[in-house]
Length: 125
Image (tube, rainbow, N blue to C red; front, top):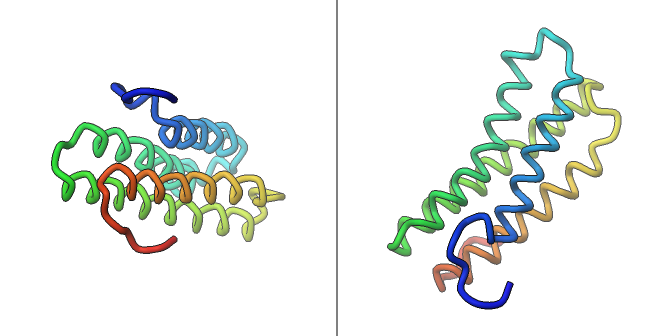
């Protein structure tokens, strides 16, 4: 998007993270009822945390604060990656390749966004 980004909704990385949240909510509706307070809740919480921490970091002024929130988002994304793997192993998700591709895309975008937003190198993904 040309020009200065003024709100988090304009961030492509947030848009992709938000789409991932919606996808997780849709997919987990099909999980067994006994997972409602287990894996379903954990997956949803981790996915929401990614998008929410991008939002929080976006409004922080200091580089250190920004990096902290973006790192938390990256950690939550990796947590979600594990839950997707586990869901596949438990046969709750027949094919995890699409979700893994979405998670990978958000991860790469978040890494690049962090580097460009704060002008600091971050650990490689």
